[in-house]
Amino acid sequence: MLGFNEPEVLSQLASTVALRPRIDELADRLVDEGFDHLFLVGAGGTYAQMWPYEHLARRSSTLPVRAVIAAELVASGDAALGERSVAVFTSVSGTTEDSLSAVEFCRSKGVRTIGFTGYADSPIARAVDVALVSEPKAWPFDPQMLLFMGRLLSRRGEFAGYEKLADELAAIPRLMVDVAKQADPSASAFAEAHKDTDYHFLVGGGNLWGFTYLYSMCILEEMQWLRTTRVHSAEFFHGSLELLEEDTSVVIFQGEDETRALTDRVEAFARRISRDVTVFDTRDYALEGISPEFRGLLAPLVLDTVMGRVSKHLERVRDHSLELRRYYRVMDY
Image 1 (tube, one colour):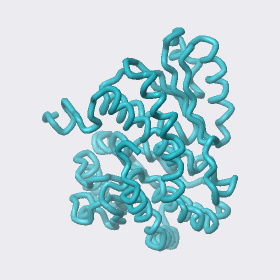
Image 2 (cartoon, rainbow, N blue to C red; image 1 turned 180 degrees about the vertical axis):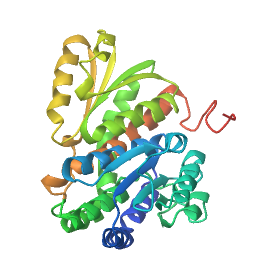
Image 3 (cartoon, rainbow, N blue to C red; image 1 turned 180 degrees about the horizontal axis):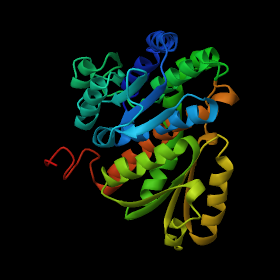
């Protein structure tokens, strides 16, 4: 497949799920020692990737958990930051300046810090109290975060079936390769049909809202310089729907959690207005070996894999490299 190195993908994803023993040990230690607040800290895409796990905690746990933007945390502070707090950071390169500043800020408050990254000698890996390192460039962080939050909530008696889930996640590398292969033809077709489309309206909800935000901002805007509107499916009928016209490209991300009906409602309305509605639905993928009760939790990882194929084909048809930047890490700001 175009721009797809299967052995590399398998190896990178395998390195993420191989962290399970260390993640289990870490989560157990945190629960045994005790803490009162959990901060999931990121910048850009890594901030968006924290939302599904705030969402998971919010719907099943009384533990105060919130996703926060690294730079805002440093600028505004948080009254809950202290020795009874834990902060989790993710960074592919381990060099994101805003996240590094947030690590240092948290540590100055006595917060215990944890980092997931692909480089053991990176600034963030060296700065956090505990670094859990996968292979370089391994993305996304969903396997690690799902294991971490699953174990943590399980130990608190707030997540049933963690051991079963964690065992099933061992199949993630092969499953995601299968998802990529299945998605590739439709990804190519979408890219061909939207070669000249310069505006996309993206919708998602539940644990896919973070991915919706991520794909809109970090891929279509940052990597393809396309204009987008992104809106949560529960908020669709409060303003943004007025931007729809009959030729508006509406891209809907549909998962399998309890918010599915909210996104179905958006799709039904959008099809009344626009002739260009595309739905990317995790239900279309078999995910053999994953129990039905866990499928919804994997939606962000599945959609990241599917849309990774779309990104590669957009790069091809638009002759616009995904690595090309005008400002990000190019100019000082």
